[in-house]
Image (cartoon, rainbow, N blue to C red; front, side, top):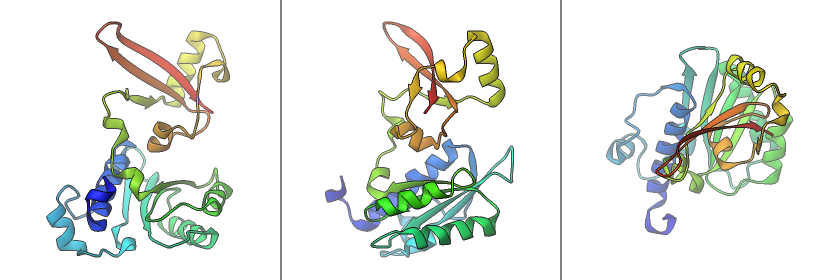
Length: 206
């Protein structure tokens, strides 16, 4: 897919899907441009968009203190100093989560730097090319829904087991990465089959 589209189109698609990902995480976005139309994107950002200008802020309706910053970084080598700048930006906006879309490769130093700030700040790194497709829209991917603390408590009481006895799903699983699920959360997975009908499974993020 990357070979068939221009760099600008790739950035447009990645931004559109990243914004969609934010809404699926429950954030309401503060933005004025139409994310779905390429012409509108070109009109606002041009044929060679400034990557940093593509950023967007989202807040949850249920808790406006819970926000997420969508950041685009086209540095040839994203490192610890750049991550520190992002943390400072989050502190300025009084939010604790960020989705960082990287134009080039994601260095291991950037991953280590992000982990250093957990659990106070939650930073998710995505390579632009990984956002050219919305993986949650594939017909083989069932809905994944994070349970609230109360729902988790009720489930564990009903099953009479601790959370760590539930089947596991890795925090590095692409779906967990997409939704920003955190270790310890319990996820409800809903499957529909022509043969077996509807089934519900639960996994704990590890």
